[in-house]
Image (cartoon, rainbow, N blue to C red):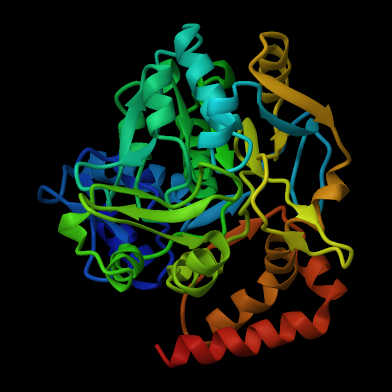
Length: 403
């Protein structure tokens, strides 16, 4: 029996492979994204099954788009391949020239600066990103059309949000700031429909360690002594580097360090698909940005507050030219660096990539389907750290069968 689009989407979700990116809602107007009972963004169908021909077309497009089904490493002419960080044209130490933008952003304010510059100069009609919602504890997708909006949206949102559905209304007239999985889904979608590269939206992404449940935010807010209804403002990071998790009510403000809020709370409530992520560094984007942490004498990242500094990776020629133009326009400071200098300051990304083959094996041994990954050299990476990969396989197997 031929599977329907709904069958294909359900299979991704029940196997724990949904990223919550909203790529399926880009594929079909019958799909909307909502928080499920565990606090993650998941698809739901708003209407009954479509006509057979259109359903088959949507199913095929979904299977080519969804990063919970498949991810193929981008093949980019003129780019250099790196085993951990993927393809790149150039790599930069960077920050926003505007001090307010640099202070507001999660690290160097690079994405905030680019968003404001793109819309204010008319290079794009809008930039799709994430922002606090009407309830400050919730995150929502927005269309940024001014520098003020870009500043209000600045800073990380360590909570579920699906930006891709907004892209359907504008596509090439927009840029997208999205999680790596959202950049992947967007790139695979536009490739699948045969859209020329020049008509793809500008894709901006960031280094991502995973999407926590909305319940992680709500629980942390309550542990700090607030009710979610009483919160008037919430920031996960920003206002410094790395900044603090800060919650405000009408009468009080309380903060936790980044190390404590992420390491002891939010980062412990990640969805399953994030633990199987093949690309946490925005490999399908035009530009990907991450923290360029300082290291101590042992080579470990230091989270003491400082002026923000980012690593900006131009993945494509278009991304490279955008960064250089932003520098010429006085928007960004750029210093070219060796990509290997990013390895010690991003140990989580390095370790996850090296042990991913083991985690995929453990997940399959536990009876679950996993996404298909092509072009990432995962077995070669696992062979460099075989003991760690085997431990990851065993741990993932145990966690899978224990539910």
